[in-house]
Image (tube, rainbow, N blue to C red; front, side, top):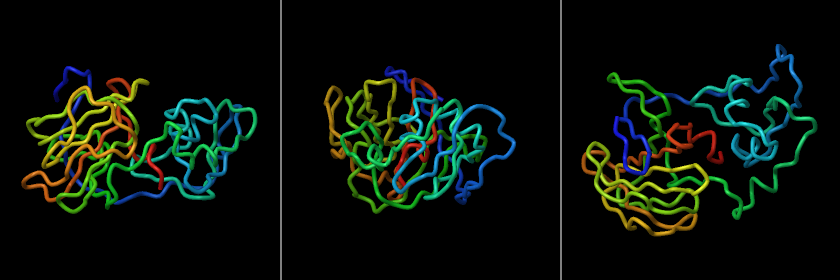
Amino acid sequence: MRFLGTGVLLVGLSGCATIEQPDSRPNSSIRQPGVYHTVQHGQTLWSISQAYNVRIDDVIQINRIPDAARLEEGQLLFIPGAKETQSVAAKSSDPNKNEFAWPVQGKVVRYFNQAGQGISHKGIGIQVSPGESVAASRAGKVVFADYLQGYAYTVILDHLDGFHSVYSLNAKVLVHVGDHVSKGDRLALAGARGMGGLVYFEIRKGEQASNPLYYLPR
C-alpha cells in the first residue's frame, strides 16, 4: 500500500470474478422507516442516494448488494429514512450533474475487493484495446500524473467535493498536475507494457475506496 501526497491510497491489482446479479425482490425483513424505489434506466446507486439525500453505503448495506453487482431496470431498492418516492430519471441522464461516467468502454475483468495473491484491490479493471483514450469520469483537477511503481502511468483527479478518481496501467499520460479537466476529457492512453489494454480505475471518497460499479451507469 502507498499513500500519495494527495492523500489517495493505492493498493495492488489481483484476480478476476463473474458478475453477480442482485436480488430484485424487496427485503421482507426490513423493519425501519423508508420507501421502496424502482430502478429506472440509467440510474446508479450514486444518483439514487443523492436524490434521496441518504448515504450510498446505507443503501448498499440494507439491500445486501454484492461488490460485483450492477443495478437492473425494474429492481426494487429500499431507501432507509426516506419519506416519499423521488424521481431521479432526469438527474441520471443529465450530463451536467455531478455523476460519474465510464473512463473507457470495455469489459470489466477485475472487480472491487476481489482477493488474489494476498492482495484485495480497491478498483476495477476494464479491458480495452491498447492505445485507447482514457477519459475523465467527472470534472476535476489533476493532482497526480506520472509513472507510479506497480501501476505504470497513472492520473489522479480531485473532484473538489471529497471524491478522487484514479486511472492506472496506462502507456502515456496526456495531462499535467494542476490541469483542470471536464468530464470526458482525455487523460491518458491505455496499454501499459505487459498489461495489454487493461485500465485500472478507482473511485475514492477521502481515503476510503468505493466500488466504482455503484457509481457508473449500466
